Length: 365
Image (tube, rainbow, N blue to C red; front, side):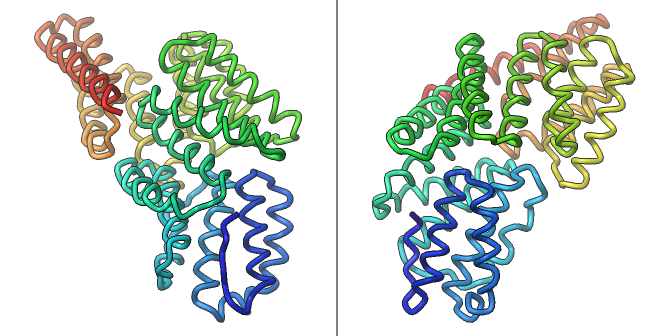
C-alpha cells in the first residue's frame, strides 16, 4: 500500500490507499469506480494541502494506467504547484512517479536521476509489492535505454515478487513483456517470443484488452526485428486501427511497408504518425517518421543525411545512442550505394564506435 497517513481523514486515507492498490495491480475498472467515489469528496481533499498532494500524485498515476501513451507532458504541473510534504513516504512516491513521468516523456537521464532518489528511500517502504513495482518501472527505463541485460535483471526481480502474491497476474504479464522485448533485443528471438506469448495469454485470461493490444505491438516489433514484415504488419495494423494514437505501432507498420516496397501505404501511415506526434508533442518519434519519410520519398542521400543529423542532436541530448548507431549504419549503406566511399567509411566507423560505447555502458550496468 501507499501508506498515506493523514490525521483526521481516516476514510479518505483508506480510499486513497485502496485506489493506489488497484492502480498498481492494473485493476482498471476498480480504479475507475474508486476514483468516482473519491472525487465526490474532492472538496474535503482540496481543503488540506497534504491530502491534495497525495490525491494529485495518485491522479497522475491513474492517468498513466488509463492512457500511458497520451499527452502527459503537463501531468505533473498541478503536483509541482503544491507544497511537497517532507516525509520519506511522500518523497519516495514523488520521486518514483516523477521518474515514471520522465520515462514516458523519453527524458531518460532525468528518469534515471529520479529513480536513484526513489531507490534511496525504498528502505522506508515495508510493502514488498512496492519493491516489485519499483523494479518493474526501472526495467522499463533500462529497456528504453537499450540496456537489455539490466532490463532482464530488474524485470526478473519484479516478477519473482509478484508471483508470490495473489491478484498480480497482470503485473506478472507486464514483467514477462519486458523480458520478451529484452531477450529479443539480444537476438534471442525464440525466448523473446515465448515470454511475449505468455504475457498475452495471461492478459487475455484477465480480460485486459487494451494491454493485449499494446503487447501485440511488441510482438509486431519482435517480428519486424527479424524482417518478418508480413507477420509484423498483421499484428501492428490491429493495434493502429484500435489505438489510433499508438505512434510506435504506426511507425513500425510504416517501416515494414517500406521494407516490402509498398511506399504509398508507408507514406499514408507516416503522415498519420506525424499528426499524432504533433498532438502529443513527441519529438523522438517525430524524427523517426521524418527520417523514414525521406527514404520513402527517395531523396538524395545528402538530403537524408541532413534530416538524420538533425535527429542526432535530439538523440544525443536524450542519451539514445542505439538510434544514432542504427541511422549511422543506414547512412553508411546509402553512401556506399551511390559510390561515395569516403562518407560510407566515415559513417561505418562512426557506427562501429557508437556500438562499442553501447556495449561498454551495458557492461558497467
